[in-house]
Every structure is written in C-alpha cells, then in structure tokens.
Length: 115
Length: 114
Image (cartoon, rainbow over all chains, first blue to last red; front, top):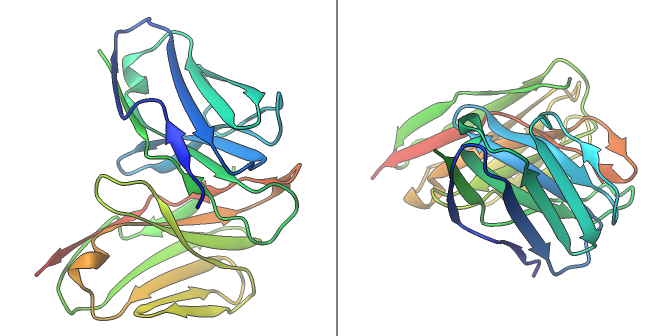
C-alpha cells in the first residue's frame, strides 16, 4: 500500500512566522502535489512537482513556495504566514508518466492555524 | 482556468434513501475521478471514468460520465450510515510533463439520519 505521511496533524503558528510542512511518500511516485482545503471551496492546488528539483505553480501559489530535493519528500513553505493561510493542507502523490490511470494518494493532512 | 462545479453542496437523507451528486464543466474533460472523504479523514480514490457515456458500478454506487464528457454524476442507492462523508469529483483538463493535474469540485457533504 502507498503510504503518504505529513509531518504534523495540527500546527499553530503566529503571523509572520516561516512555516514548513513536509510530506513523505514511500512508493517511489514521481508526482507530488500540495493542496489546501477550505469549506465550500473543495481542494485547490498550490504547487506540484513531477520530478526531483522540478516544480510547477498550481492555481493558488501566492504566499507559498516548495522544495523537492529528494524524490520521496516534498515540502511546502509559507515564507511569512498570514491568517488567511489558516487551512487544511493536503499532500498527494501519483505515479508519473502519460498514463490513463493515475489516482492520487493523499496524506492525512495538516490543519494549520495562523494566529 | 478550468472550473468544475459540483452540486449540491450539502445533502441530508434518511438512511435507505438514494443520493446523487453532480459535476459540470463548461469544457470537455479528458477524464473524471471521484473521491470520498470521511469526516476527519483524507480523500480516498473511488473510481475514474474516461470514455464518453461510460457507466461504472461499485456495489450501491453508480458513476456516469456524460456523452459530451462535460458532466458526471455519482448515485448511491439505499444509503447506509457508512456512506457519510464528502464526495468530490476531480477532472483532468490537461497533462503536463506526465503530472496530471486535477481540478476538484467543491464537494458534496452527505449526512444521514439513521
């Protein structure tokens, strides 16, 4: 079974702090994604990566950056946390390549509160 | 950018009643996936539809992909309390470098009165 883990289930930070959220997967998947989930808005893609050191902006990248130094690890960075970044953050992975079947496997999520 | 509209946002039913959630797009979709998120949990993949007019069944769940590949539905027959959760559709508008981006609908939260 694919296992996707995230560094924290709950996190409380103060406005202006630098925040690191980590995601680790154990299935050698090429693609990794960061979403945020807010009530009524579904899941919105922040950034994704299809290879080590490669990254692409998603739909809402402002205020975030990412790092992928190793295949199994994808980090989301909030350079200066703001209250409007309070949300549930979900990491997901999927097999790479042009395949028709590519379900996304999600981590348990990190609920971040910025005070 | 690509948008996928999902309705209704909430649905409350009596146990044993049927439930349907709908997803609509203004543009043609290459495929559509459905996910279920239990309360306090994370989204879990249910199924993927690729072909125009495709219908797939998983026990009491029936998934349909429209003929024009612009809409999809999930129907649950005779709901059970284990069906409680939020159901998301997710569409693939494009493939980039092999990383297939998904655009998620807003989700339908299903609650059930036992």
